[in-house]
Amino acid sequence: MSSIIQLLPDHVANQIAAGEVVQRPASVVKELVENAVDAGATEIKLIVKDAGKTLIQVIDNGKGMSETDARLCFERHATSKIRQAEDLFSLHTKGFRGEALASIAAIAHVELKTKQDQEELGTHLIIEGGKFISQDVAVLPKGTSFSVKNLFFNIPARRNFLKSDTVEFRHIVDDFERVALAHPNIHFVLTHNGSEMCNLPISNARQRIVNVFGGKTNEKLVPVSESTEIVEIQGFVGKPEFAKKNRGEQFFFVNNRFIKSPYLHHAIMAAYDGLLKDGSQPSYFLFLDVPPHTIDINIHPTKTEIKFDDDQSMYAIIRSSVKHSLGQFNVAPVLDFER
Ligand code: ADP
Ligand code: MG
Image (cartoon, rainbow, N blue to C red; front, side):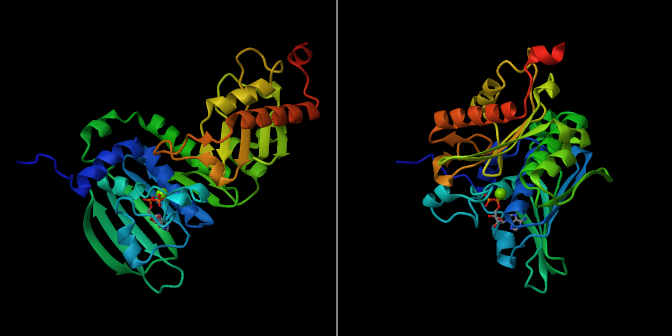
């Protein structure tokens, strides 16, 4: 009896998986910048041309890769960050799925330059549409540089679907800022079409927020600090009188990872109950630290959703600690400051 089922070749499987990981240029930025953070970099430079449609380059001064790893990193499910399933419950890195680079290389032209500190020479490698083009030994500084060009060159439908440069660049800035806010101990620089858009020196959490959102932000922030058995909360919430119509400055980080959570957003809004004008949105920057085994981050390939073991307690703790902080700063209810 004949069989009609076949295993897809790797480059086809990678191209299919890439659809989930890489939605737009900003997804590439997120994956490359997160890898640079995981590599222990203290300086990360992002160079973008034409909102990432022409070039996305991330240069870091992290630990670099050996000659062998420079090639292996583009294989699917190739990762240095976990070894066994149990490691998922003790994650301290941004990455663990080992599929970002394989996906990106499947749908773009990628150039990698990398050198480990202790090595004399580094590796210069080119891979296009999942095919290795060249690999040479090269004189390089310590760290890693990934250049990604011609994104979606072999998926015309995706390329045509990209929005204007303004919109795509906005997405890049959003993803860049999310990582930068969570890592004030790293110096970040962003250039677009040759101009420096953002230069964030090493600082603390509060100063980083001010550097990202501007000097006036400082006076708007009320500190939040809470320590319980299941979570440690640090961060800032905006004074209600500075609340805005849009939701631009609302950030949750769990173990230094930006997370979208309508449920926890609701907890914050509940803490502001009675303090906000109708429909206005407070800013918040909350950094939650939880034991890695009490969360599941492997819900979606982009890892912006999370499942807490005990989300009801999380809700209650966030609501009460934010409420407490707002109260301590003698925040007046709406009626008072409208007079
Ligand atoms: P993951 O981050 O989930 O492990 P990736 O495909 O993003 O998967 O990266 C694969 C591997 O390549 C990483 O586990 C890491 O060992 C290596 N790597 C990627 N980027 C860098 C970098 N900037 N510096 C050093 N090593 C890197
Ligand atoms: Mg990664």
